[in-house]
Every structure is written in structure tokens, then in C-alpha cells.
Length: 439
Ligand code: 5AD
Ligand code: SF4
Image: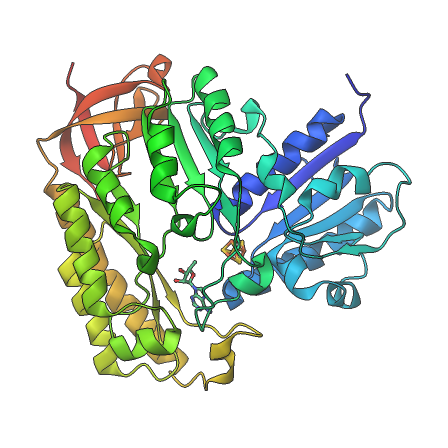
């Protein structure tokens, strides 16, 4: 066992990919003798894993980094590391605004962190933001104590993006698409299966364009055949990369959950073309149809942007119309904000903020009513629920997720965590279901 190097605290913002990266950083540091702490004042090393996908996330990152200035004054030996997408985006420039930061670590450099924070092993300040061919951090296996639920493992299968949607900064901060070799992914899944993991959650910015030595559909088939694994999920997928083989998987692979996150972004062909999305409203709807034919109880979640440059009120109505047709379970909806370096940042951001706000409200009101109706349609049905943990609301209640990724609260024993039980739905709520054990 290594001797104690000090206390470390990581703050994570943004997507599930960032959550997993943070779990990996913790795992690597603990391996080398660091101890995690929730007490920021105790920490000898503070890491901020940042997001810059929208302007708001970016501003939040900068204000959080700024706030650490005081920690550094109180404890001059404290090392402050900024990683993630803001670190990649701003690089050296971040020091100019935030001189109290010690290390700026880009999205391809995470695996170097333990060496960089070893005592006196490098000079500060230091910036490492080069893109490298292989993302070493994809191979780091998270320590079991950092799996949020020990029965569910998140696994990186690819990183980066080649799509260059006009609004999106991701290709610039995560780099071009790189797939992890399939054999390494399968080894990791087998490792988790031996340790009682029931659900595999595959992660990447564009998982369905995976090319690590086999197609994404083939990878799903191979994972499906691993004993002990009961459920498979993945995110995020791009509509233009939904191959026929992948759609077929929903007909042939029962362990594949009946839920797909498939961002549509906008319902108007003109807006989709300006966004450079590579599909039309009609082809998106046809895709949803084909998926529902392959798996009739399929539930969908999605991302949508309102107020993209030049979006007219009529074009926005087409977004609402598409929402009414698909009847998503969940929509993550955002007001457009320009991101530096993207194609859309050259367009005039001409939809007024008040108009963006009102479109967002209208979209969310519509979606709330659809979500509730979808939940009500599940009343009286019995579902297999993989139990995640104790409910926060009541000591007797536990909760888990259906294949549709809907949370169900019900009375049960916390020793059932990690098991799949049958639950009959008795109440539909806005964000969850309530049920009764059916056995
Ligand atoms: N403005 C608003 N929303 C954006 N997204 C990505 N870039 C922007 C932007 N510039 C949204 C998209 C994407 C989600 C992760 O964030 O909907 O799918
Ligand atoms: Fe945010 Fe995108 Fe980076 Fe994830 S990949 S942290 S969503 S900017």
C-alpha cells in the first residue's frame, strides 16, 4: 500500500462522460495513496472537471474556478487542477484570468494527472492540452467504490466527434472520434460481470458510429452474450448513424433496454440543415417508427434547442409538432447560446432572449403534459425493476428503474439493491412512478 499523499476533492460538471472521467481520476489517485474528502478546506488537491457545452456551463465553470482563489490564499500548498472541456477550450489563456490555478489538463490528458501531482515532479503552472491518438483514460477501470451503484457500470467505448453540428463545441474540445478497441471493452464487461454488475451503460459522444474493430451492433451482440449481464444501455446516439443492424438489435436482443436517447434538436428541415444535422424531420420520424416496429414498447428521450439563429415562430411550431408526434418520455431542452469557434457563432444570434425563454417555456409545458400522460399509460402494468437504492423520501421506500429508464418508488427491503423485482405501477407522478411489489 502507498503512503498517504494527501486529500483530494473533485468537482464534476456536465455530462455522464465527465462523471465517469472523475470516477477514473479518483480511482487512479487512490491507487497511488491519495484519500478522497468532501471537506474542501482539508483538501491538498482540488480538481474541477468542467463543461463548456453551453455558455451557461462555461460561465459557471469560470465562476467556480474563480472562487477557489480564496482556498489557495488560505492554504498556499493547495494544488488546483482544471480539467475537462473548459481546460481544453481555454488552455494557457485560463492562467491569464485565473493565476491561482496550478495545472490545466485537457480532455486527452487525464491519465497523466497522478504523475503531474506527485511531490515536486513538475513545475507549476503547467498546461497539457495536446490531443493524442489513443485516449488512455478509456482503459482505466473504475474502482468499485466509485460505481454510483455497484450493479451498474459505465464504460467508455469511444470519445470525440466528427459531426461538426453548427452549434456544437464538442468536436473542438473532445477532438476527433476515436474508438476503443472492442476486445478491451469486452474484457472490461467480463470483469464487471464477474463482480456482480448487472447493467452495462456504454458511453461516448457518438456511440453509434463506434468503429473499434467491429460495428456497434456487433459489439452489442457480443456484450449480450456475456453471462451475468442483464441490461444494456448506451448514450449518446446520432440519428444519422442508426444503422439497420442497430435497429435490428431491438428486435433480437432482449437485454437491450427499451429506451433510446436520440437527440432531434429541431423539428424544421430548414433549421436542421442550418444546424448541419444530416437528417430531415421526415427521416427522424421514420427512424422512430422503425425502432417502434422492432421494439413496440420503446421509450425515447431527446435533446432540443430553441432559438437557433433565424429560427422563425413557424419553424419553432414544427419542433412542437414533432414532439407531439413522437411523445418522448423526457426532453432536455436548451436555449441556443453561441459557442466560440463553431460555425453558428458566425451567424447573428437574432432570436431575442425573451423569445427564447418563452419558446423554452412552451416546449417544457407541452413536454410535461406528455410525460405525465406517458406515465399514466403505465398504471396497472407490472414491470421488471432493477433496484438502485433507498428512496430519499421515506425509510421504507426503495427505488429502481424500468427498462424505459423510468424511476419507480415502492415499499421494499434495501437488501434488494442490485436485484430485479416485479413491481405493479399504482401511481403516475411527473418525474417518476410509484408501485407495489408484485411477487
Ligand atoms: N446552445 C444550446 N444548446 C446546445 N447544445 C449543444 N450546443 C448547444 C448550444 N450552443 C445542446 C444540444 C446537445 C446537448 C448536449 O446540448 O441539445 O445535444
Ligand atoms: Fe460538456 Fe460536451 Fe464536454 Fe460533456 S463533452 S463535458 S457535455 S462540453
